[in-house]
Picture (cartoon, rainbow, N blue to C red):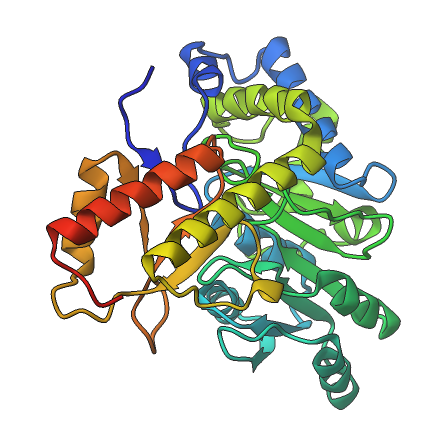
Length: 368
């Protein structure tokens, strides 16, 4: 049993002993057994999104942001234009990626507690026919807000545009069906709701769009078209793969299916979220988002108003009791965040809130 603290963060997150143990074996990167592991992984990932008929799963070394940059650089032609929908830090990052890559883009920004609406996207696409792609953060991790993916996807498709979805914090826990929700690319990573370890991103790229993307990429290493072509031909990664990360994710997927797949993972995270919100409310904490737009992934709480509260001290004291929280990422109000994902259940969430209560007493924080 590990004595490490429980990570109540949006990834990296607490993994199971089985997942960690899967990293104790070394793999040859060109070995047939490892190639089969990669192929099995991609097949299972496609199954989660129901994408076998329409999409390719292209894995990529690195963090989720690597995969986002690869998707933009590969699937958006150099003369394309991206409409970036923003209501948090990760939408801002996506816009920065477009800028760095030299892709023309425009932004539409709403408040951090307001989801983007399909009606707004409809108006924006009518106003600017030069837009070729729309980029959306499904669950904005800076607050935990959930944007209306299905409705926005329908509008984008009706306008004949391409949708790129950053689903880092939702894939595997919130349903996304490629047969019902049209998208050109959906991007996720190993260290989130699938409860693997960080180090690998993957892009579900629509088959025709990927086939047409040769020569688009700004980068050799991040060229998803080349990555997929090479893997299809050889079964191997082009460059040194994160072998232990792949093995850990493969084992994490075994547990995912044993638990009951997406429905069971969504239910557990939803129960974690409810347990967290109820226990924190009992202490007097106010959540930043209304319940209707709160995803069961990570919850942002307003910081105590008491002058004796300092986040760094609060964080270190809670960590000493076995729980790692997450700092806030808002600019206008002071907050902190608590993740609901990872190898944790509602009892674990309530135990974490008990630790928070003890720390508030130690700090003599009374005004929440």
